[in-house]
Structures are given as C-alpha cells and as structure tokens.
Image 1 (cartoon, rainbow, N blue to C red):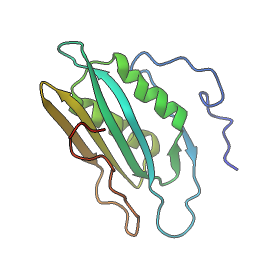
Image 2: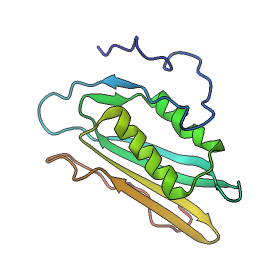
Image 3: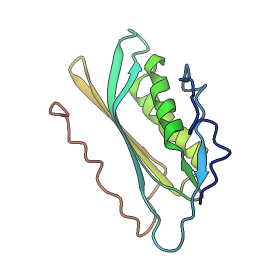
Image 4: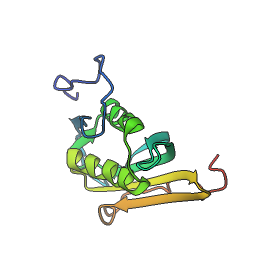
Length: 153
C-alpha cells in the first residue's frame, strides 16, 4: 500500500495556485517490479494559457508520457499545476517545455515525452514535442493519439 500521508493536496481542499511557479508537484513512490517499465500517460485536452503579447487565451491538447523510476507524479497536483497556466503568459514552446521539465524535476523518470498540440491563432497551429532521450528498452510507447491539425476534433 502506498503511503499518502505526506501528500498535502490529495484528499484536501486545495487553493488553485496563482502561477506555475507557485504550483507544487507532489509525488508518490512506485514499486516497479521486474520486467519492462510501465509507461504512464496524462492527457489534458483543454489546456489553457495566455499569449504573453496580447493576453488572449491559447488552447492546447497536452499529452505527457513517462516511464517512472521510483516516483509517480500525483495526479491532483498535476491538474492544479496545469490549470495554473490559465493566468500565465508564455509562448507555446515555453509552456510545453516548462511542463515537461517540471515533471522530470519532480519525478526523475527513466524517460519522459511531452507533446503540446496548440490550436491555431492567426491560422497556424503550433505543435511542440520534447523528450528526455530514448524510451526504455522493451517499454511499449503508444502513439500520442492526436491527429495532425484538421480541426483537432
């Protein structure tokens, strides 16, 4: 049984962080066992941030795949972190990389890949991809499941 007594957000009323910098990503230990590592996927199809120039909202479909080593990111803290971008002004590339790097910093995974599929502004969708290296040997890494832009729906 996983010890969740050190978690401050899960099971508690938690205020929405005002910014990604203020948000705390909590982790829980995982027993990997033997064999190929698991791939864990988080999908956020309604991610929102702000354009740093105009202040207008930007929307993305974010897919995070990672192979945990000893720590999992706790999903409520991840949700609070992701929603903290709603009032954060940054370019698409910066948001995507910031998310990936923060999850890596918190969990120290064997591998992580993030895909940010940004909806068009000015007629151009921007897709941002980043990963920490090659996926672990024998791990099954599915496609992200997000089609190239054709209305993304």
